Image (tube, rainbow, N blue to C red; front, top):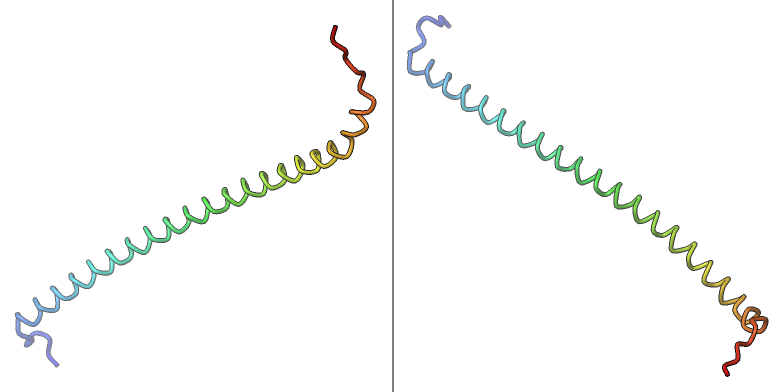
Amino acid sequence: VDVSVVPCSIDHKSDRIVERLSRELRETTHEKIQAAEYGLAVLEEKQLLQQRFEEQETEYETVRQELAQLKEEYPNYKRNWPKITTC
């Protein structure tokens, strides 16, 4: 097929189609990048929350063990604590 014989309207129509498809591709690519950045931010926030949860869980367990130990030792302290008398 001789390209010089292709009607001008077909050539312009092809250009418009290529321009439209290129624009749609850029928009779609931009949207995918934004979605990926948002997803990454969500994952980072999840990791921070998980780390804080684990730290608080460790602190809770430590306090729970201290409380259990104090409950166990309380009767001894009560028995050995000097009695304060009032006048």
